[in-house]
Image (cartoon, rainbow, N blue to C red; front, side, top):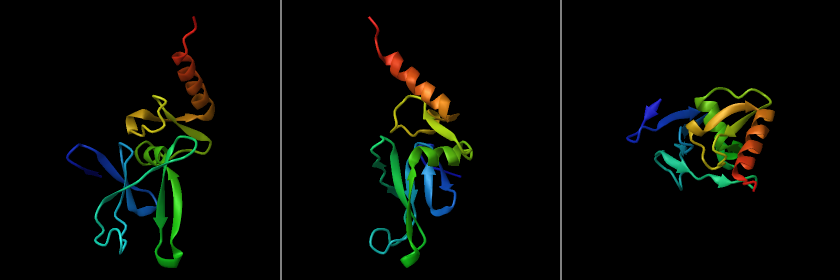
Length: 130
């Protein structure tokens, strides 16, 4: 477990030795690439926006012809690294409803029905009934 100047906790991503995840949702890579990262410096992996609104990253495993890219949603990687292993059938709830806020303090592991109920309550709290 390493900490930077801003007190961000960074842990390795399980099963992916060259990638790290911070508790604020930033994904880092130390993967050596002759063109982009020849010395294996720590660099930020750019997250993309999925049509569902969640952020996801492409992480490479292996090298050469055996290299495969695995797509992972950032909120699930943060929860798996810092909270606990996510059991089958469980969801990750963004407490504030913002799918781009993958900070550890904004995530919790819930059942699918709890996640749906929380989203319903957030949507109805914003509506004003006059």
